[in-house]
Length: 117
Image (cartoon, rainbow, N blue to C red; front, side):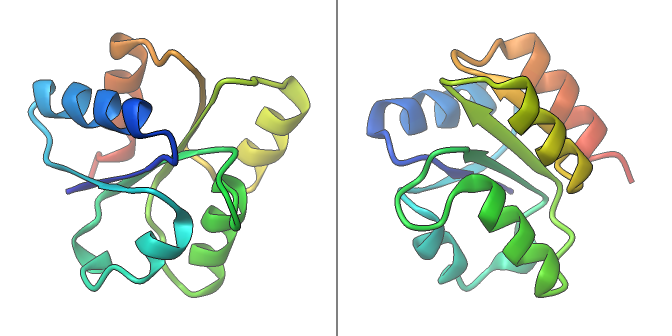
């Protein structure tokens, strides 16, 4: 299962539809707090999170999960790509940092890498 944390309803629906079309099961969350409250974190194989979320940002969510011992591959997406933020995120262990609108081929390549055994 893929977790999609995106506060924009239409963007979340688009990502959910896209990963579904790629053959993955996605579960959407409007913010990091609702994702963290999710009772099935063990089933999450990859996290796709917006960089700018209310409360806890995508990068902060990734760091919080790692600090708690969860090693969920994380793909960050943003409408405001910034090379400095991308470098910082990648150095922190994020799998990928993608610009919106997300290109299907690019996301699929990232997911394949993230989900390798």
